[in-house]
Image (cartoon, rainbow, N blue to C red):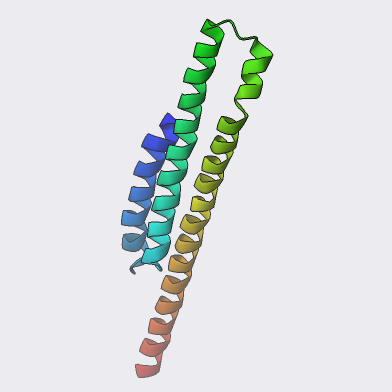
Length: 122
């Protein structure tokens, strides 16, 4: 969880800052950037809190002497929450990839059109 929360979000910010500078145009979609951010953030929080709460519940159950297998069965709703959060984080990366792809593709198209216009006026 730590690497996604710390390093991934820093990498996302770097991508959104550097990519437009490299290709010479703004990101294709601000809405996709926002969707990526919110899906990543909410997904991460659901994922993390599900695991944290599950750990506390399981720990207290072990202290009370609940058998291990029963505590594993008790974790089902938390594992489902973790799956939902993980899916949201996964989906968020598609927003990032699509937005990067469209930004690069449009930048290439714009440069090609500029080159054609310069060739036509020369």
